[in-house]
Amino acid sequence: MNSFLDNVYNRHLKRDEPKFKIWRSAGLLLTYKCNARCEFCYYNCSPKQGGLMPVEMAINSWRSLKELAGDNAKIHITGGEPFLYWQRLVEILQEAKKLNLGPVDMIETNGFWATDEDIVRDRLKILNELGMSRLKISCDPFHQEYVGIEPVRQLAQTAKEILGPERVLVRWEKYLDNPAANQRERKYIETLKDYPCRFTGRAAGHIAELAAKETIEEISKTNCRGAFLDAKGVHIDPYGNVFNGTCSGIIVGNVSQTPLTGIWRSWQPRDKVIETLFCFGPAGFLDEAVKLGYKPAERYAGKCHLCTSVRQFFFEKGLYQSVIGPAECYIESDD
Image 1 (cartoon, rainbow, N blue to C red):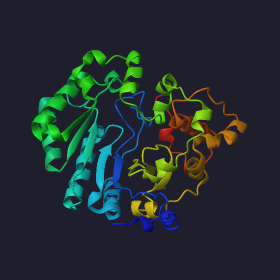
Image 2 (image 1 turned 90 degrees about the vertical axis):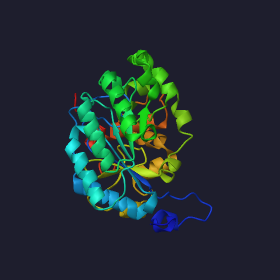
Image 3 (image 1 turned 90 degrees about the horizontal axis):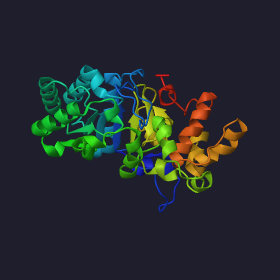
């Protein structure tokens, strides 16, 4: 297990200065492919996106996180929709169990596959035997545009029976119990009020515009120092790209090139993109972006919305490709 001083940025700080936190969790994005194309997706997942994480990459990342955080390490598997690749999901869990890496903390799904009671029971029993701690089921107006509510209800009910209620998370349960709430756009604003989301990926599009209330002047008063330093974990996409915390589309390293432990140890805000966000927030990009033709909106739904908008512009200009990527986070493959 590492200490704060194993990170190069932390070594030069005074005792009372905020430190770069040790990553204790990692979300493995098994794929960008999803049966749904939700308006609030933090990436740009859809039926036409791709990628499939190799077993070796998943296991190496899992092992590296345990080296970094010890017994505090927690892995969850997400996507995209991981149940589109059921066999790969099982292979990863089987190898982790074989190597005694500990239980996977959580597996996420939208439940689209839960249309047959026998299949649901068989899969839940397999996941239980392979050490899954919790099952997280997405349920909200965004997902229910693409997934019928009955399979989701069946999955939640059967999972609570087999795993126990304490091991089943339904996000968000009020929509599971209230089908009348599953309406399209008129419910979006109410949902965002109930459950604020991050305006990154596709979520920085239509629904961010619906929620846009902050001016650039207001956003410019904040930076992203805390977002980088305080993030307790990362997400790793199927190509090995590492995103600090929930900042999708901002690459801080790649586990195919450097183990996760090494990425954490060497992290510091020296890259231009990350240094700008760290010191000035996304408003720090505006002078350069405007000179290149970016046209700011009057209002944004927050700094993540502005950040995603400017990064999208830079991506389309082919700028900062080592950090602003991969294409899946910026290109709508359905178009």
